[in-house]
Image 1 (tube, rainbow, N blue to C red):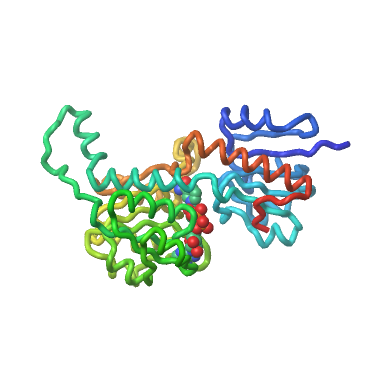
Image 2: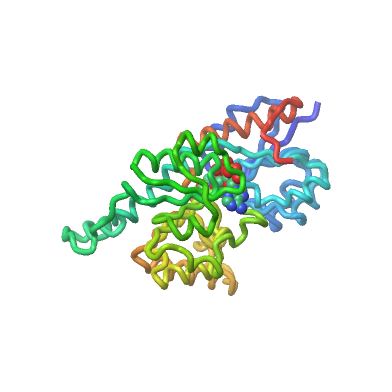
Length: 336
Ligand code: NAI
């Protein structure tokens, strides 16, 4: 019987070792550190199953080249890096990992909130220079402040739970409200405008799609309560870049903690830029990132909110389960 071929992209040595143990000799496994995109799509022309992470671009051109592909088992919650319509047309199923890290991403959200509210990042830089002065480091309490959660799903709800532990008031905007949950956790659903006007901290936890593209934009950014903190661990496209820069430049946002930001996928290749031809697009992104980095009230982290030991193991376990169940015609986390 022919072996089932699986190609894993964007894998580290640790992941390769862990995943190899999960499949027997009926499988032929391929591991690549690189992401999958137009330039290396020949690698999957005869592969049955692929498993990318979020930096791969599985567009219609890539899918066009596949002859035997039956399943895309993305090792992520979001799947906006996959052309779902094209996959459907080619009768390719798509599976994701919906639950691996609601606490993990929520904890990182609070790492960003606390760093900004207590100036931990500034204090760190100063003390490494042997400067222990307090001037300019005074923070503010979270207790009694209002947190506005945009998207009260798995991660958003975990953020709400943590916020309640800090004694914060919580409001949420979500087109699919769950009133039993809001009664239980004592938070209130409000309109987006109301949330922007009333929150001391705004945190994004909705998916990125055609409805949430530039959900925060130049039209509604001016509603934000002056000096609010802005936290984005969801996806960069949910806020219009121009609105983000405008809000930071005009002290509408008193600070921003960004795990995701425009062009992050291009910046991963920054080390290669010295040897490659640099496109204008790359340069623009680099310039904008450097403008953000120069700001004392902005903290960037490299899309790492999901990345804890426990969460990565959960991701791999669910991916293996998705693949096995797909092959055995059992239930799996099916996107399409
Ligand atoms: P989820 O599907 O459990 O929750 C999303 C919530 O957003 C739902 O309650 C939904 O009703 C709501 N929503 C949908 N459209 C909306 C809109 N227009 N406005 C406001 N709310 C809306 O998803 P989960 O697991 O909580 O993840 C949220 C997002 O976090 C993912 O889509 C992903 O992009 C991002 N993420 C980021 C990670 C990182 O490492 N930075 C890791 C994992 C997820």
